[in-house]
Length: 242
Image (cartoon, rainbow, N blue to C red; front, side, top):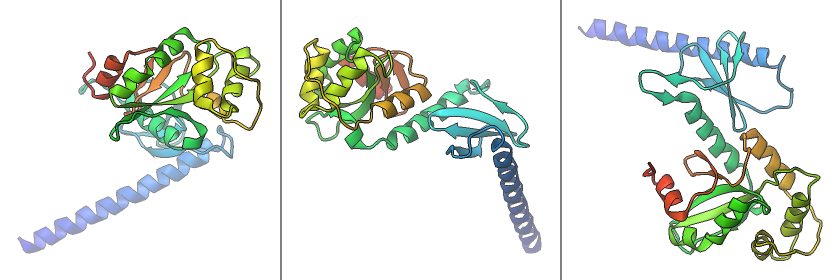
């Protein structure tokens, strides 16, 4: 019995080593293939997908799939028909969390709750958006329910718009939080210019396929499109929303 046990241990170790070598070879082949279609300076994450024969390629918050021979590159949702889980959605949540973690706190405009255990949601917002205005008016309600609001600037009409200039004025103001509150209420803010992260916010929002505002990213990485009241947002964060 002991010798059989030792044999099984040896076989298991050999198979595990062989599997690791194959996985390393697959990754090398895939990376070589991806150099032909992706810019050389592009950073991406490559790991085996939860689907046999596929790897996931995470480019910031975007998720692609590639076959383990590096031949086919795919985009789209993949569903597990047994568990009824959207595998791509789960991977995108992970990718959003990682992408937002790379955003420096100094490059955001955060309105913090006084509650020490408050959770932070990231909101792509536009000062000329009616639902963004409604959202900001209820800031005290979000804070009362233990929610910090971290704004990223997303002028929907792009860089050459009046909204972009307004949002630059806000960022470059001596008190950006007061300026945001004034501007989103329709008041004018002194024209200003300075180095700012707005272009990076826009680029990240586009990678995340943000098409409207407000766009809320929960701590779980879930993307919620549109306005939510404080009660509904709290329920979403807690996983109790219907």
